[in-house]
Image (cartoon, helix red, strand yellow):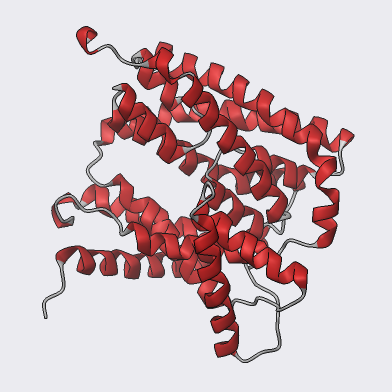
Length: 358
């Protein structure tokens, strides 16, 4: 039986991504190499070889979501009773998130409208400091330029994902995360591998069902199920290192594949505008973190990653890699994204593009 072209292409770029991850992990100091390596190499591949890409190709969403669920399981294993007991102490940082969203939206709007020349609706949705899929969906409904919007939201995440671990390394004065030899590992349950995988699959299935009722459900559902199992003491969830590596390769390859069909000139402009936008948001994160470490028990590392304007899955992966309390980081990013989506939804009627002006 002949396999569909899209399946063959997906398999090919995953193999390419796997070799890229191995090369990045073995020969470079790149933070989070098993995700960033595949992301960068796949992005270059789909940009320089457009004739090799099947028409209308999109990386299989359901396949990617399976591996996002694996990351959710990993994060859930980091939740302890100490973290749960300390949740009320995070109220200053949760208030700071509101101020971060308002300042970031205002600055980004100026960058995209004044410097980028984007129309008001497109600039507004490009400015959202969170909620990639939600901002794209709402922007499309509002009549803005979806291609520009997708590019800007995507480059926001990529620049954040690429720069935060490096900047943190400079701040602490030594390599951190995978650059320092740290790897993403789960707990040791003492059980045979097949039992660990069976337990993980069962908890993941329950988590995916829970996730149907939650934002970022494919991450949050498994996270909650994993945390509940660990806190209850019913079982110790353990995932072997190779499973976590494969999850990073799939997520990185999927992100890189989105660059297919993009013009180099448009990408250059998007990156230039994103450097200003992301640079401001990271600087804002830095300032907020310096304040929070004086009024809360949060470490600078946890605070900085919690406010960096990346996607919840990718920033949670960075937190795992840097051993920076991923459960707390995930909590803050979910609040940021949820509040951002609420804000752009509430203001949507004020930023609809009038087709008569086109």
